[in-house]
Figure 1 (cartoon, helix red, strand yellow):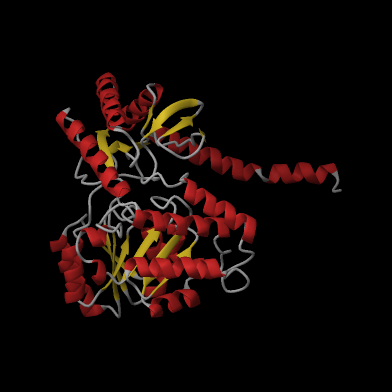
Figure 2 (cartoon, helix red, strand yellow):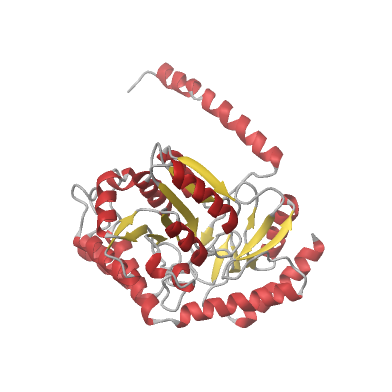
Length: 403
């Protein structure tokens, strides 16, 4: 055991960390953007306990209500019993289990691609695939509202980044025309469905522009996979360009009710990522229960189309009632419905008042959204009833009037 004086010295050495923490946190509080985590209890579903209060949940990404589906849970439990709770290493050492390969084969078949590769999170997928495709001397073209993981993947790639206004295809064409004249490679990266606004990228036009100018296209469809398109294949299927997207990126932890992410595309792309994607190479593999749950959920997406139909019907009802009440739902055309209030303090007060009435829709502020556009981000589920949607809107009318 070390002498007590050394322990005291060690604690004193940490004072610098505390000083930095207090300084930064004080600035965050002064901006009105300090965050706290809520504690949720109970099985994932339309009703849960939030900070000890039973509420209807309109804040999550378990869109199809598969996270606690009996087939998904049983698949995970069976895999835990048969294979254990960890893969035991990275995929390139001892962690490449047959169940991983089977999931990836099923994902490739689902999207009509040659191959797929699982990652531990969507964030890790983007910071792995983007630097694998572009680097110094290349240009990455990015929508202004792209997800933070795309922004960070672009930074790690060291490619030159050119940003175009959200969804502006005229500006995009101008950038692509210039970029392809000077760069070694050009990669266009867009979200399919924007997580804070609920609107779609104009994918048909973007695919055509990428082809015309010789750019690669990476589609991050984290919120569209399973929820959109006739077969649940996401925003590319919804927009009629499923077969024309070179790189599909999606998550397993949202509509598929499990955990992890994937990239689907050509066999050559998969081989490239296995060899150079650092977030894949230097991570332990997804655990067998997570993989088995994802496979069961993917089968349910194909077998139970009513879930995505009901999800979109619920979202349409919610938007129609909010619009009729005079609320601003922005450009939403999906199951992500923002109620834009603008002011940070007003938004968070409305969030808390709504929670007291038994509804959980999280307030979202800068930097997650542009300053001055704070909103309640409302996400119905496939298994919410019409009466629950209506009750939420009635509560919102009261809360917003008060705040």
